[in-house]
Length: 249
Image (cartoon, rainbow, N blue to C red; front, top):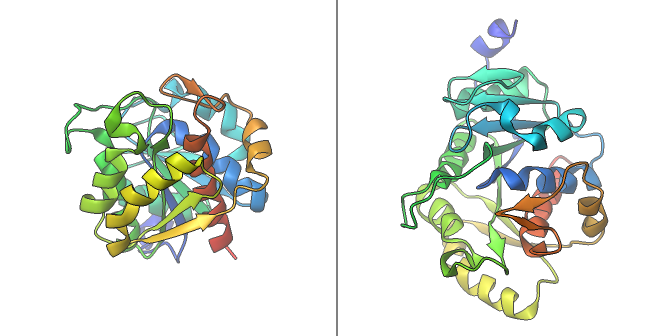
């Protein structure tokens, strides 16, 4: 039924697009968006780096009444709409679902080999490039952790550094939450320094986001850690949503 609309669609009209590495960022990003823009229509574009069927996600089931819809792209399937690639998926989110804002992330799961390039999250940088090609505004949800036992994921994950520093060829807004624990904050500032050459690093207030995250209709969990185990991860995703919501104005 959307064939005619999409046949003529060629741009996003400046729509904000939040890109995230992990599926677990989705509810936190959404909490940040709706905390400041409760009436925003948010679509989820699910890429095929993790699980392929949308119905595998308990998160999507719990967020169904808060999303304008889900578009599965590439080899992923089972969304409200299905699209060939991220480009057509973003266009479907904007022009078929009527989204004000989109969140792009892989489905549940994550493939990684512990090497610089061998992980499914490189698709984050590709989503940034697609957003730029279509005239959208990219906001990156950095993957930050103070609790991950693996050095390559402590502070800013090497996934984010590679995806935004090497794969993304267009400028991105990269919000950082204020109030990070001092040691973590110093590490993060050091790690994002190379990204400043191309991207905009922004400090965003977390005021009110703790309550918004705790009120999420789905349990917040990443790599087996809940919100209280690793608040920096969820707050970073939430401030990306908050910044994207402010761009709607």
